[in-house]
Length: 223
Length: 223
Image (cartoon, rainbow over all chains, first blue to last red; front, side, top):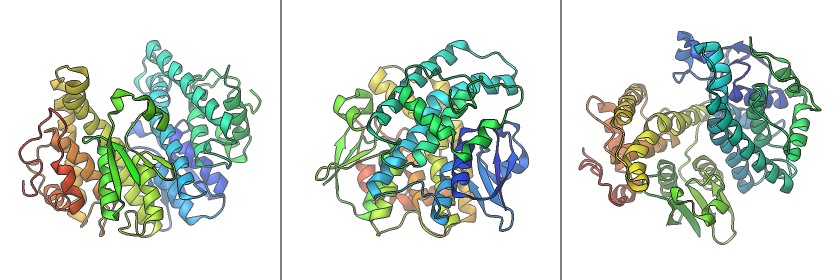
């Protein structure tokens, strides 16, 4: 049985969970807070970051969202995530990298730091200037997604792909933390509403991270 | 003909160049400084980052080091970079991610900021405290590489892989900027000496970034 080490507001774990659900890979969730720096977890992943997957039968361990997803992409035929010709696959991977690096670094990570980490780990008040700046940048990213969806049915083109699940994973964490203002972003809002209604998304939206309450619209498909 | 938009001290462009050389993919170099924010380059890549590759015949564009490399991995058989079974491929990708994200963020990027960007773009003096801290962390990363190479012939296992070229690309930039102290890191030093002697590495080591002079040992295979 596969075990997935993760915590509810880890965007990279959400990305993996959405893909595992679409591909129908059975797995068990193990809650892991990287900031606790548990020795056994560091032994598994010296970078001490979620997600990590372990096959309890063979001992195989997979570390990091993209290596995990490429592994299941190569071994499970159901619901291809990186599809089409090599150039289209490069476009899917470009957007995945954009969300995992640029969107994460400029928006998701600072908002997680201010609204989750400071509250749970540091017991400090958020820096409102940092928050405002991250939310301003988030708005620019939503503009770019609107632009993509004006020209394409899904993020990377005509077919639903890993680009959509990656974007949805990151945005869902920011949305949980009240960091998104959806006004003026009809295209992305409509797309996100469709993503939210996928069966694999529902369990995620029902979970809560202790003490942190999401806004009312967070788990609603129509919002 | 493929064009590669890059600049000499971009670690991600170096990673791509090493792979293109090993695979024998003909290409032309176009020098691009992302900080100049050239309009035509932003049209190519809205993230305004190197590397970008463009096929001048078909107009196909590939953006970002990992999407570019996966593209050529899928279309060129020579010198497989992500090889072995799915679990081994996950281990190669884990290390690539480690170097591209963790090593880059903690070591390569701050040293590039202090020793290259501030000199060329901001015309400011480096922050010696930031530099010292990045070099301290670099030392810890070299310890981890020593540990890997104590247990394995190459970074990810028995075969030379993308993990080795990625590590070498990042370390070569830090080494150019005088950020590595090789003392006490015999395993990694020996491995790097072998990497440096690969034909694809030589042109890189011969290039200079204007006004910034590397240390004497930088381009020597025996150092």
